[in-house]
Length: 210
Figure (cartoon, one colour):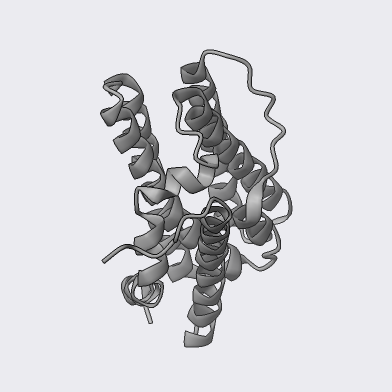
C-alpha cells in the first residue's frame, strides 16, 4: 500500500459518513441549531482551540522526529487559526470549551502511525466543516469571513497531505498502513456519531432525504 491507495481506500470505506458530514446539516449539529454568526464563529473557534491542544500534546511526547516537527508546526498553525477566528468574532472567547469526541479520540492515539492516520481522518472531517463555514458566510453575504474559512480549509488540506507524506515514510508494511487506516476510520466515525447524536437530539434525521 502507498499514500494514494491509503487515501482512496479510506475515503471509499467511509464514504457514507463523510458525505453526511459534508452536508448543510453539519452546522446545525455543531451549533445545536443556533445558526447565528456569533455562535457559528464561537463553534469554529472551539474547534481550532481543541486542535491546537491536541497537536501540542502530541509534539510533547512524539518519538519520531519528522512527526514531532509536523505536530509542533500544526499546533502553531491551529493557534493562529484560533486567533484569526476569535478576531473575526470581535468579542470574548474563553478558550476553555469541551473538546468533543474527535479530539478525545485523537488524544487516545499513542503511536506515530496511528496519530498520522488520525490526522488524515481529522483533516477529512475538517475540510468538510470549513466548506460548510464558507457556505454559511457566503449565504450571509460576508465575503471577508468566507475567505477566512477558505484559507483555513486550504491549511487543513495541506495538513492531510503532510500526514500522508509522513505515513509513507513510517509505514513499512501493509499492517502499518492498516493500523493507520483503523485510526483514521475511528476518528471519522467518532465525528459522525457525534453529528448524528446531535441531530437526533434536535429531532432531525441525520440521513439525507431522497
